[in-house]
Every structure is written in C-alpha cells, then in structure tokens.
Image (cartoon, rainbow, N blue to C red; front, side):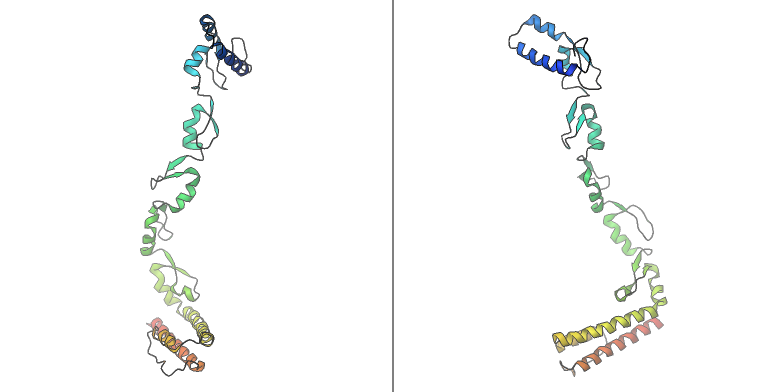
Length: 253
C-alpha cells in the first residue's frame, strides 16, 4: 500500500497502519499527521487502479470505490459496487418486475406462476389461430369461434370426436348410426342401474313419475306398484323405445 509495496502486501499492512494511525489520533501531533496523510497508497479492491495519498483516500475514495464488494440487499449475493444496477435489473433472483402485459409487480422467481394467471397474457386460439387474445377474453372468443374444436354432444355416451363448431351438425348426421348405437348401450346400462336402484333403495313411485315426465314423452306410472319391478322395467324400456324413435326421426329429416 505504501510506495514500493506490492498490491498483494497492501491490504494487511494498510489495515494495521490505519489502526495504529487511529491510536495516534488520540494524541494529535500535527506534523506527524501531515506526514502520514501524504503517504502514497493504492486501493486494495481487486481491479481498481486508483492511486493517491492517505488523505485523498479517506476524503474521496474510501467507501466509494466502484470495485469494492458489497452484499445485494435483496438476495445477499456478494457483488461489486459498480455492478449493482445490472445485478438489480438482470441478475438478482429476488428482483421485482412489472408485468409487460398487466403492469402488476411480481418477483422474478414467480414469473412463470404469474404468466399462468395474468388476465392480460396473450393467448392463441387453437381453432382460428388468432393471436394476442387476452386471457380474460379468451373464453368469450372460443365460445363464438366457428373454427374452435369442441367435443361432440354425444361425448357423454362415448363419442370421442372433437369437431369444429361450424361442422358439428355435419358430424352428427354422418355419425348418426354410431351415435344411436352408443346411446342404446348407454340407455340399456341406465335401465339396469335404475332397476337396481328400485330394488336396493326402494325408489318411491313419485320419483319414477318425475323421472319419466322429464323425458317430455307421454306416459303413465299410476298403475305401477312400488314393489313390482317387472312393471317398472317395462316403463323404462317403453321410455327407451320412444326416445330411440325420436332420435331416428331426427336423423331422417
């Protein structure tokens, strides 16, 4: 640190010297002080080329060196003083950013989680390929997009096709037989389940009346006794046949 010393020797000797100098300050000797203040030193921080005397160091460089190592106040990583701005803007995992879509602040480490819920995040329609649809408006878009694929209305009975909305009726006409077959198996299973329900739970008569009337077909349950399972099955089968006739009529139009 003093003139003639190598930089590797500097920190140790300089730190010891400062402690000694502080002790001298308790018994001031102006002449000695001026002599010490004029001693040549170099900065101990790696990469810094500053040179001067002790007085200049204390007044203008100590605590202000661009190369001194400081902890980041957010993530505690050790960084150089002159790298604070870059670290805070680009590197710190705890840095706060403002979403470029909704302008809300969030921590950088939560960027993926924020993108998943951001109401302004741009979405792409899988049907018409329209871009930059805000997430908050995406549901309304696909509701009316004729190119968006939607499950067939018969998916509840087994049809696994997804069809563009504008072609849904063409699909239903082209696959009428397949849909009818799926529906038949579904209703036959429903018949068995209802029969078991009547046996196991002793389904009351008024419940059967309500179930039958919901079909929109004309029927009469008044003559059915609660314990007469055979007649209950007849009512269910009658409902199935009428429903199938309606479906066949619809597909023949």
